[in-house]
Each structure stands twice: as structure tokens, then as C-alpha cells.
Image: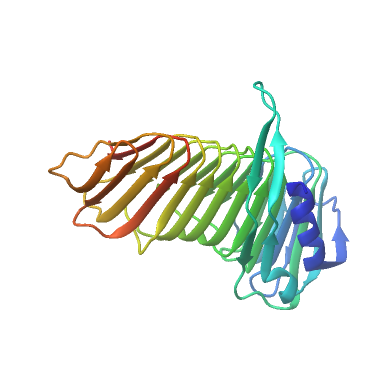
Length: 309
């Protein structure tokens, strides 16, 4: 089943549309009673940018062509637990078809209420900017080929993408991102996040606000810089891309890395880290006296662990 079919069926189950608005006014807008549940479905490839606004609801400035906004009744039973099934497929490339399998995933969205506070957006046109309250009850995005930027928004979210890139900037919440070939770039995240991609590149810049995170990347590279650590744990599962983990001075963490078919390289000086175990395919070390657990497991890729420049 395609990503678009997966999340589209979820959104259909979650919502019964009550009103649709295609306005000729300057903005498309809906007020909500409290934090909204927002669903976004992109049928094109235009960029989707989501930021906080002061409207008290959901607004699409400028009334871009091809955008529809509607209100729906939220079902807590349907929205509160998202199930992404195991997905198998192939992606075309210059080197020929590349096959992949993404595992099934259950994802809970806590605190979802029954009620008429759902806002649905459909975009069959170009770029779309969406303003939402600082905190949403839930945000469900079926991006398709559209790149998505989520900036300074709080609340639980699920973003499913085929080829569109996903960018998270200073987001607070509990989130799941799944792409096939789209890249994922995360900076300044606070809370918990799970990221999985078949072929995309994952770039992370994290601080102490990130409590827990997991990255699953089947064929792309992972570049994760720790500017601080929270409680942890932090886990990376890689297929055959390069994994690079760098840590800023002063961080207390324990790093365990292994690659079944690739190499593991350490660039920490013994004076800056307690190197407990070091072999061509495995490494265990503690920096700053140890602390939050960072785990890397690669099947056939290389792993590099180093101090941040």
C-alpha cells in the first residue's frame, strides 16, 4: 500500500466532514474551540509550511489556488491511535529498482478529544503556508511529494511522505515521521520523535530538550550532532548508509556502536573519553563520565563517532 493510501485511509476514518470552504476572501480560515486536530493532504508537490499564528484557529494566508478547508468531527477512537502497516515496495533510481521494507508502527496521540474541533486541509495546487495555534491537539500530514516544514509548533504529530523532504525546527511534542526517499532535517526538537526512511538522508541537531529519539534509515546516511542530551535513550538503526555521531564538549553520554558488515571508527582521544571496547566492527565508550545512552546498529554501513568540530 502506498503512503498516500495509508494516511488517506486514516484521515478518512478520523473525520466526518461537516462543512467545506473554498473562499474568494484574502485568507482561508477557521476558528476552533481549544487546540485543534489538523489534517493536511497534499495532492501535488507544492511546499507546505506550518507556523504558529495569532488567529485562534487555522488559517491559510493569501487564499492560494487549489486549497480547500473544512471542519470535521473528531473521533478520539480513530485519531488517538495511528497504525502504519508494514510496507514493502521499490524505488526507481539510475542504478535500477531498489527494494525496501518499512516495519509496521503503532503510534499513540495522547489527549485527543471527541468533538467538532477538527480542521482538514486539502491542497492540489502549489505552495501553502498554514498558521495554527502554538499548540495543536494533533497534526496529521499526508505530504506525498510535497516538502513539509514544521516550525515552532507544539503537540503530537504524524507526517507521512513519499519523496517530499521533512524539516522540523524548534518543534515541541511527540512525533512520527516516515518517508520513502524524502530527507529529514531536525533541529531544536523538544520531546520525543521517531523517524524512519527507506532512502532519505537524516540530519539531526539535538539538545537537552530532546528526551528520546529513534532513527531508522534503510539506505540513506545519518548525521547526528548532540549539542546536549536529555534522559535518552537515542537509537539509530541503519541499513547501509554512513552513520556519523558527533558530541559537543561537556556532554555526558555512553555510546555503543556496531556494524555487522561495515567498520566503526572512533575519533575521540583517550584523554577525552573512556574507551571500554574498540574493534573494527564495534565500539563502546563513555564521554563526560557517561550518561544518556546512544546506540548505533548498522547492517552494512560504516559508523563514525567523533567530537563535534
